Image (cartoon, rainbow, N blue to C red; front, side, top):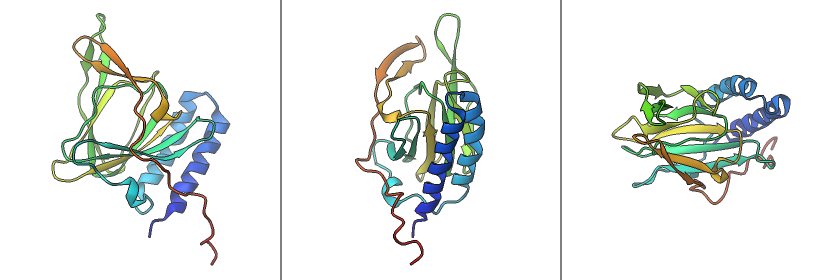
Length: 198
């Protein structure tokens, strides 16, 4: 049985941090990282519908969106060999690896506007990383495993599926705007407490 209370407790705690820190991005990143680390340290809470890979494309399942769109929680499910294009986020984000492992390559602009790849980083199960426009926001992510899916949990400072973002051609720095949307049409019911105490 899925321990959905773990996700509900995370959403509650993360929302309190957004209330406490407001637009102080540095404070939010530092406060949210340990929460995400605790969430991905135990793998008993993600409902199966939000952990299914697709044979062709990685999946971005919405788990929760704050009603004021200050926060969203998403599970990314990567099939073997799947990866993102080079892209940005335009809001702060914290990522924790729940299952498997991922490869992350960050990019920095040179004086001519071209994007220069930085050394690849391997994120194992339990690893936590952050992105934001102020600390580095352009990267690509791929499944590090060739034989099974990997899953990471992403927390963003906005409704990430509705934000205008960009993908990039690294050799020129040229950007193409996109809105990612979500792979799911519903979210888990975090708020049914009717089974508690029975």
